[in-house]
Length: 94
Picture 1: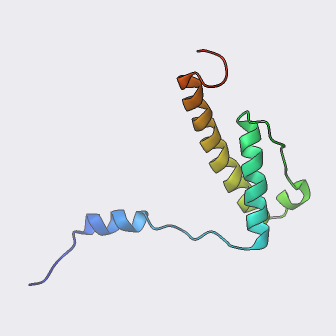
Picture 2: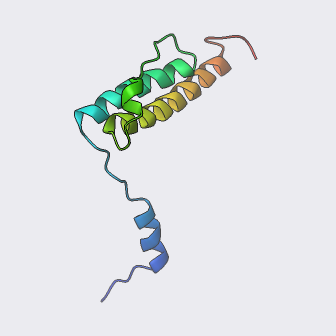
Picture 3: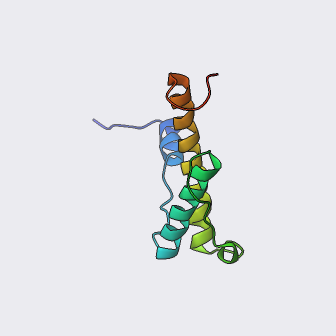
């Protein structure tokens, strides 16, 4: 017996393929600093960190990591703060 997979299922799975992140030291440093900065932007008491000179270099893994870390951690921190405020743990009552 021959099993067939519908074309739609294959296309759906292909769309879910994850593009691997660069694993260079520059990317990791950028991700960590971007992550911290994203948390800062969300209102957590941490320091904003960014190497402005490296952000201007096209194709630098640092800039790619910083952007991804900033948005990922900033979003996560914002969502966590919203949940905590909703439970009355921190912030002002809404």
